[in-house]
Length: 467
Image (cartoon, rainbow, N blue to C red):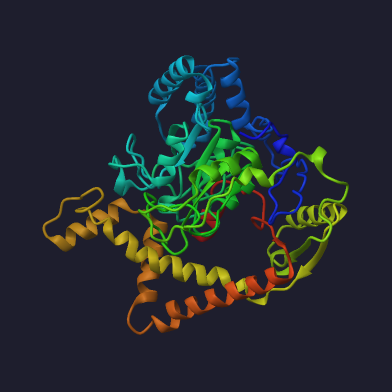
């Protein structure tokens, strides 16, 4: 275990250069007539380190730590609605068992994540609790196995406290598309937490759990992390096994994580990353200790980023991006320059093509992946007089509006006569965008852009705009 670090003052570097000191930022929200209700306390430097040190020193027990988090969860959950399912009794039992093991076995009985409470996005399978994907069609479904990422967390000693809310099957960016409830933002409960992993981001931000798992297909970890003021990490495709993740768009889906510090997310990634024989797309490259790329600010020289070239993507600061977002990116770029880096704007004309290509490709894959939810093999069954009517009734009653819309769009893009015009062309655009990033990263060590074009918006605002 590395020595204690001031993780809130560190950032993970893009390559093996000196780490980037992290600045403290305050949350910014738009003016409103009523004062915002805030449920997000300030996090410590590294929650994982703090928990581990207090357990091994005997200062606190796992039962005490679990009780503290569950108490906060029960107090804030009626307003936040971050969780679809809370396994509080199971968490308490696991904590008591951990205390007994540590009492009899000492330090050797503690894993790297012992006593760490984890929230799991409800599109990741868990054998011990329901897994719905945020959809009514899977209401009450309980898998027979854990997703690989969940299993690895449990093996490291983590305690899964519950399943977090999401936009149905990961399709959305506000968590208003859940089939069960709308999650709110801990910094202002009149606003969305982002999505689709809004429940996971909200839970970590409100300290209902220490860390959480999410999934990212088109921004579903990065955007809610931005909205909720936590660290969100989307690993490279294949770095983390997708086994046990309910498929939305298989060529894009990635299991990611949330934490209150860079150190905590680096710790989680070190545990869940690695090849998995159950996922042929998982990478066989060795898993480094990602925490080794972190260092205390006191160890850095005055210009730790000398010779590091950073590019700001021009197209991400144009029309449609809030002035406050642009100002924040400019301020961050100025700070990076003060640390010795060379910061330049770089134009990537194909960047704007990424979003329409994503919608075609993701919807096309979803139309295939979600065909399994037919009321027979999976999902809630609605009675009917014949087979086709059973399919139609089960899907019509079990799936939400956004999911149906994307299935229809994907089916259309894959249909005869339109495949070349839509799906094939979107694949070509994907290759073009990928090539432009590779070229830019040949000139720059790091590319930066906003995680979202605005701060968190009011609940109902985006849904109203679509009507």
